[in-house]
Amino acid sequence: MPRRARTRTTPAPAAAARRGSATRQRDAAARRGSATRQRDADDEDARIRDTPRRVRHTAPMGLLLTACASLAAWLWLTLAQGMFWRTDVRLPPRTAPAHWPSVAIVVPARDEAEVLPRSLPSLLAQDYPGEAEIVLVDDGSTDGTAATAARLAAECPGIPLTVVSPGEPPPGWTGKLWALRHGIAYARHAHAVEPDYLLLTDADIAHEPDSLRELVAAATSARLDLVSQMARLRVTGFWERLVVPAFVYFFAQLYPFRRINRPAARTAAAAGGCVLLRTAAAVRADVPDSIRQAVIDDVSLARAVQATGGRIWLGLAERVDSVRPYPGLGELWRMVSRSAYAQLRHQPLLLAGTVAGLVLVYLVPPAALVAGLAAGRPAVAWAGGAAWLLMAGTYLPMLRYYGQSAVLAPLLPFTALLYLLMTVDSAVQHYRGRGAAWKGRTYARPSDVRNS
Image 1 (tube, rainbow, N blue to C red):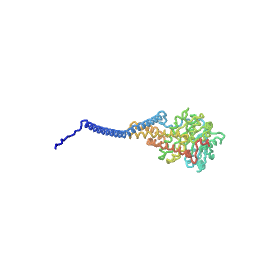
Image 2: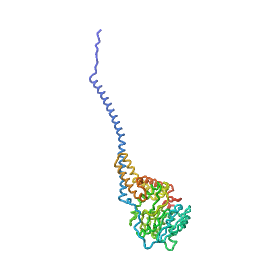
Image 3: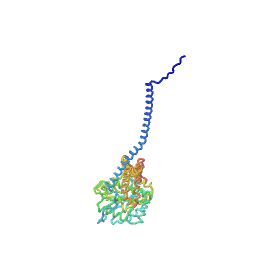
Image 4: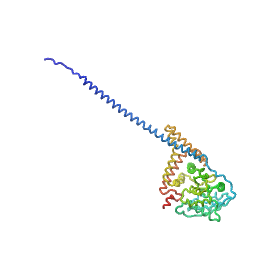
């Protein structure tokens, strides 16, 4: 049987080439897929890494711009306005008049029996060379204010005192202005000759013995129709030290004293605790009738006098002090919030602008300084720190006036935050029907009175 020859088949070169090419293509595709996945993974990692970086770049830029805006605002306040580096306290240059004019001191008082023993004797003891009398208007008090005043007048004889009572104010009148109207009318018509001047002073204000003399001398020497001094408020407790100087500081920002005191000034303001008003100017401006709805009565009074051609002057008191205590934050909060929204004319847009302004001017600087230091952004920290330093520097004269430590100056942003919250609370209370409240009375805004 013949042997079968063994044969070995070998792949054809073309088939082998095709298989090798396919293998290489699969390997290349696998490598490309792996490379693509790696690139995608790298891109995702880069995106994750870059997101905080973009945030870190974008956020400081916005904060830097905001801090620079705050710094620019403070540069304008200190350089362009220039009213903070010195505190205006002195009355205008004055000389004693040849004939001292007559004065009626009108004191509106509602439930003031507690403070009258510390304030009324200072009025009774005024060392005034001309004729003077005191008219205390008991505005519906329930604590024996009238009896307390009569007792003090008997114990401290001096300038004659008369106590009158007008009854409850009619619709459209605030209680204080209704009391002032009654007191002014009595002072003008109780005697054959009406007084030359009216001193309108609150029941909690104590005067040095020569206070009236100095006020009248300033008015006659400078031919002023209205001379007003912002009484030095009591500053003894922690919250009074923190809040009270700032209260006067913010008022001076809204109503710069030097701008008010210019002869042709358009800005007008007064401090209701101590206002010496020429009687003829009061008649010409028809006050208090023309401002009978005003919650911010002192500013409204000054505007009315100025609008009728009267010259006004406003400064910080050297010899006039408030004896009313504000021992806790609650009492100070109510003092500010009861009229803060009225100061903004009950306008939501003005409220929003005020809040934004307080944030920009007072809260951004310390925030920018801290954020800049934490993020390693020296430009942000520098702008915030410079604005904060200017802020503290402008506050120092007011702290010196109140005899307080310079340590309180850097705390002004915290106090500004409190005032921001007080202002917002004032608006909230207004829309709840409890705004502009004082000693049991709540006053509607003027438009509400007219529409009722």
